[in-house]
Length: 269
Image (cartoon, rainbow, N blue to C red; front, side, top):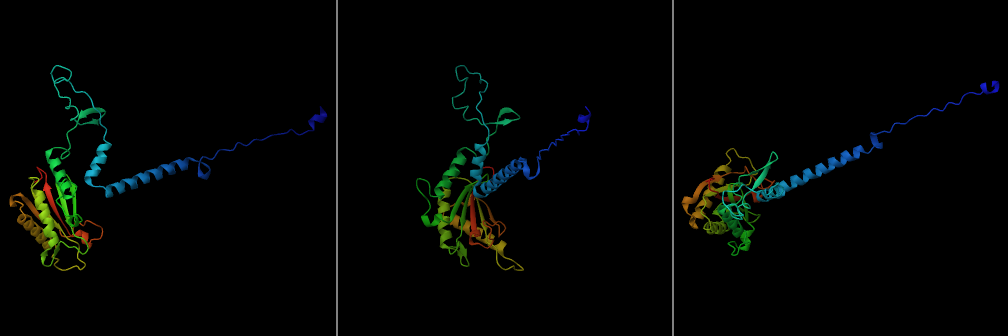
C-alpha cells in the first residue's frame, strides 16, 4: 500500500471542440448565397422580359400564371342535365381566387369581343400577315403595330437615309404609308388620333421650334390621311410630342422621328 501511494494519479483531460458553424468552415452561407444568386437571376430575367416584350405579350404571360379553376354554378332554375344553361356557358366565365374563395371575375377590358378581334385583324393586315397584305415589302420596314388599352397603335418611323418628313414637307415614303393606313382604316369604324414625335436637336436654341414642328408634322399626316379617304369626322385629336418620348436610348437617332396613328377603343375617344 505504501508503494502504491507514491505513484501519482493519472489524470486524463478531454477537451471538447465546438463545431464552428460560421466562417469558412460552415456550409450555411453557401445556401444563403445560392438563394441570393437565384433571386438576382430571376430579377434580371424579369427586367429583360419587361424590356423585350410588348404589352400584349406581357398580358399573355400574366394570364398564363393566373390561377383559374372551373366550378359548377347553381342551377338557373331549368330542368334537365344542364340546369337551364348551354354547355358553353361555363367555359365563357372567367374566375379568379380571392381570399381562398373562388368568385366570378369581371372580364378585362379589351381582352375579347368584336372590337378586339377587329383591331387584331387590322394589325395583322398592316403587318402583312393576313390573307391579303395591305403593305408592300419596303413599307413593312417602317411600320410597327401594337394593341393597347387605348387601342391599336400604328407606328410609322423613319430609318437612316429614309426620312418621313423633310424641309419640303412629307416625303414620298410618308405619303405611301399614309395611303396604306387610310386603306386599312376602312376595316374598322374607330375614331383616330394622330401624333408626331421628333428626334432631339443637337443645338439648344433660345426658341426651340421642335414643339411647333412636331405639331405641324402631325397636321401634315392628318391631311394626307384625309386625302387618301379617311373621313375627317373620325379624327379625334392631333398632337405633337416634340422630343419628349424617344423610342430608343439615343435621343438624336433617326428612329425617334415617327408618327403614331391610334385607332381608339370605344370609350377612349
